[in-house]
Length: 553
Ligand SMILES: Cc1cc2nc3c(=O)[nH]c(=O)nc-3n(C[C@H](O)[C@H](O)[C@H](O)COP(=O)(O)OP(=O)(O)OC[C@H]3O[C@@H](n4cnc5c(N)ncnc54)[C@H](O)[C@@H]3O)c2cc1C
Image (tube, rainbow, N blue to C red):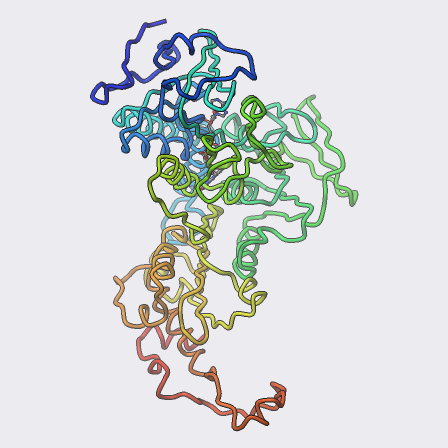
């Protein structure tokens, strides 16, 4: 072991990054050198080793640590893996999105630009590319922690009490104390019902990088975001995919039209959907060519080279011994928090996937920042429900704000504006003639309520809509703004004109003739029809080239 000396109170000293060979465990105090038994009562008047101890180096842990350091707090981050970055970097977001991009660039991704040479990618090349990106992403994270004077401690953390954490690694177990603790331990993939994955025939999403070859046939069990992403990504690489889910619908929080379009596109890539079906039996054949056979409750049989079980993720809280600190969990092991990300124990906070929905990298990161501000008495607004959602299937999907289904349920009057990528020159250039985009506007105020998109760069495009929604903008912004040409962002303009045309045919609130009439219920079928009740109040009829096109719809 290489000895390190670091004074955590000295903000000008760059702390060594603790790799496996260089283990540093906080600043040693006589109280913290030994691991006391659980239930040990710690004197709160003692000086703690750190102002903040963060457990986990995923997006929430990183941003909490960096934020607290910027507030001039003494921060240490504990990570049980040998490298920092979390699930996000090693098994989740970064590998899956890099794999997707690598497959798209080899195959053309189903877009017909009349140019790209189609090729079946080799798994070894794909994994190579994924590993390159993981390595550079890790070094970005490591450098930013180092630049912010954050002590990184390698080891598995568990609570001794509310201020004291035991850290176990190859060098042994030590205790470290902190005024505040942030639990940012994330989740683990739920184990397949057949038992632990074998990394060959039975996989979870954590094992995809263990694949030696691209399978010819793949079964994916679970039609949530991760299952859908991997099913469509592998189908794009030429793999025959069967997607099984016991629910009748995929992605029930996404706009129905968008999901229908996704399923249509996936079927074109030979994906077979078995929805409303559950797996009853799994059999592995290892002789000859190894295969796995899934029998569904309906009696259908699916033979595949391997199966990915994507049936949820469970909070990685078990090794933490949360009970020693009195931290409560819900029935699914998630940690309930208040608006400030504080658990039931006042100095212990939790952020990221361990607290549950929405369990995204970006929201986790923001939660970490907010927790760090709030625990030290700084103001930080919670982002509430306005954040974009990206599903990196092929084609990709993104949304922000309300869906039609929600607005209908909440009885909010709205109108839709739709645009197709093929209506934009950029869509034609890219060969994406299937992309679809829609905006939902309040029927009376014309405020933008929701944006939904499927197609190339959907996850980038959505941010324009997000900004307009959060700044309280609406139809006028899109009608009066000029967008670059040729861009996919033109779909905003086209969809706005489309919505404006529809809104011209919507009546405004009508004045009742007299009190008696007001009491008389009017059946909608009895309302007399007029072409355009509000000619002076509505946006002028569409005049642009793009509008004329959308009028054709
Ligand atoms: C296949 C897949 C694809 C995804 N794709 C996307 C996407 O496209 N976009 C998106 O926004 N999100 C995506 N996500 C979700 C995203 O990865 C998570 O929301 C994000 O990683 C959660 O961050 P976190 O801060 O909770 O920590 P995590 O990234 O989960 O990391 C937690 C860290 O804590 C460490 N740890 C756990 N217990 C201990 C302990 N006791 N002691 C010390 N260290 C510990 C772990 O080793 C790990 O490094 C995806 C997830 C998966 C699985």
